[in-house]
Every structure is written in structure tokens, then in C-alpha cells.
Image (cartoon, rainbow, N blue to C red):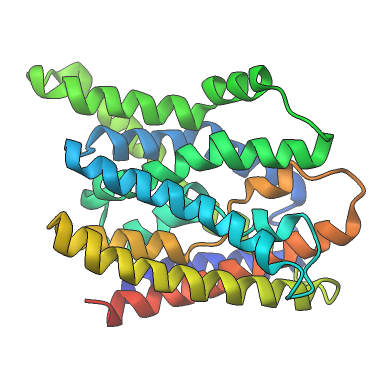
Amino acid sequence: MYSILPVLFLFILGFLLQKGSTLTPHSVAGAKRIVSDLALPALLFQAFSTLEIEGKYLILVVTIFLVCFFMVLLGKALAKPLHLETPYFPLLLGGFEMGMLGYALFQSAYGSEHLGKMALIDLGQVLFVFFVLMALLIKERDGAHTTKALLRQFITSPVILAIFGGIVVSFVGKWFSPHPLWTAIGEGISLLASLTTPLIALSIGYGIHIKKEGLAWSIKTILVRKLVLLGLALLINHFLIDQFLGMEAIYRYALLVMFLTPPPFVVTIYMRPNDTVNADYVDNTLSLDTLISILMVMLVAVLYV
């Protein structure tokens, strides 16, 4: 619990800096760009370069992908009974904000030496977000999507390039002896990756804006998301990770942290312009869920052993 307090402190500091001139929307946008294009890819490269994967673990990757898909279908089924007839309710149930929050929380709670474990847990939802969720978001915004455009976006993303680069290194690195040049490059990547947590925490804190409009929808969404995903996480941990695969306990912690994170922030990027009603709802949901996620991960770090 105490290991996450520095992240919480930076988060609160970012929120308080809304009232001053130290941070501005322009500077925060620049910080986010540094994270998305440089620091986060460096962190993900680190994580996936230490990936420990066996053939039997692929069932876990597929399971998490299917959970994300199931959540979207569940959202479509529950939208009318819950009076949440917005196209973004199902989309806010599928996927997890790992890059901009999950890795920072996991690393703070359980240490950077276990990032490879989190990378394995994250792989299924990364595939879901880039191949399914983004396609659904573009279809909602434009009325249609082209596979060619989606594929181009996928293969040119710094995050995806870093992930696949890390996976390649995890497989071929074991065949090469360490060299001072590669060690120096690795240390440079580590320094760049270390920027991720502070920049993200300050940026997210600065961007917290909760409005009355759409707040009731947001609370319903977060309740459904947390309750269902918490139940699924406990089931997957017990039956699949513990009993069937016999994996280390750290994988259980990683999965629970991921399932507690908010929806992917990418949802806001692919919304229709001037759609103020849905924009308020999505922004409220992401802001409020981020706060709740940080507090829940802190509790999990203490209580879930």
C-alpha cells in the first residue's frame, strides 16, 4: 500500500496544479506526447523483453482477450435495462488502461523486476484494444472503418513496435552474451522508461475534471465494470492461474491490478467532435474510475495475498 503513495502524491499534485501556472494544457499535452511516443514504449520494451512465456500460457492470453470481448457484449445487453443508451457504454466496459496507468501502479506496488509478468497478462488486452476496440470506436465515429487504415495505425504505433521489439528480444536475447554497448543502450532505455510514472501521474491528476452532466451514467458504468471484472478476476486467478496453470502468485496480483484499471483512455481520442453529451460522460467515467482504481489497487496490495 505505502509503495503506491508516491504515485498518489504526484496524482494529487497534478490535480492541485490546475489552479496555478506551473502546468498548462499545452505543457501537459506535450508531457503526454513524450509518454506515448518515448517513455511508455521504453517501459513496454523493457517489460516485454523480459517476457516469460510458455505454450500453455497462451490460454491465459486468449482468455483475457475473450473477457474484453465479453464485456462489450455485456454492455450491449445491459444498456437498455440500465437506461444507458449511449454507444459508448459497451465500449467503456472492454479493455484496460494499462499503458497510462496500470504499469505505473503495478510497478509501484510489486516492483519493476516483475514487469515481464505483467506483460504476459497485458498481451491479450493489447490485442483486443488495437484490433477490436479501436475498430469499434472508428466505426462509431465515422460510420465505417477500413481494415487498411486500422492495420496502418497498428503497425506504426510506437507502443506496438516497442511490444513486438521486446518480444523479439525476449526470444533471441538468451542466445547472445552481454555486450557493453547493449548494456549502455539498456540503461538509456531504463532512464527513459523511468519518466513514465511521474509524467503520467502528474498529467492524469491535472486532467481530472468531474462534471455533473453524465455523472449518473458514469457511476453506473463504473459499478458494473468493477463488480463484474472483480468477480471474473478472482475466478480466473483461482481456476486458471492457480489450479490449471500453476503459475506464480505474482501473476494473480498482475491480473487483478489490470482488471481494476479504468477503460482505455484512447476512447476519448476516437470520439465524434462536438458530441458534448457523450464526451462529458466518457470524461467523467475515465476521471472518476482512475481515482477509484488507484484506491482499489492500494487496498488490493494490502489485502489480496
